[in-house]
Length: 181
Image (cartoon, rainbow, N blue to C red; front, side):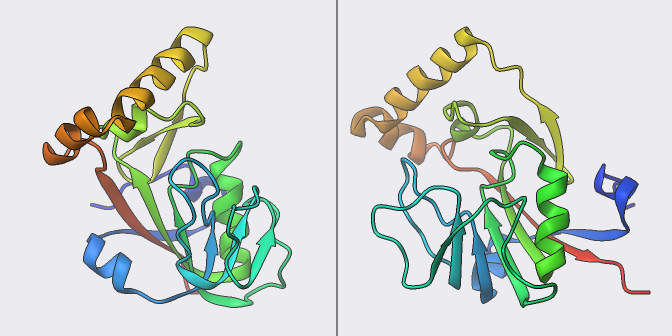
């Protein structure tokens, strides 16, 4: 039984969970959120977008927000947004905007059981199964705990143990398409 997300309130979409093999092996035309932060830049398409300028920008880089993409409607077929939606103010608006410029979104989200989910103070949303989001209360104590967890995870000794236990990166992958009428 398909789950209904907040997306369905605004427009009809089809959300499918994907395996990481299918998601990672699918070629993309646009990468939204190429990465300019602590984990570095990982371009996944010919055209790359991020709100921040990476230290080493990809060859075709555009600085833009996921919620306001400077491209014409349906300029791209496949758009990837890996670990982006939990950072934007309005993830559903970002999804709508991505589907405006592309036909299919392939999204990767931190699973709520992932250590990285809790060790990222920049997250605005907790990602729930089915590509659903729950607003994180951003208190000064919570942000400091998150920063402390990140410092622990970045130490080779602890980071290695966390990675070996498969607790660092647990991702869920989704394909999102507008329903064809």
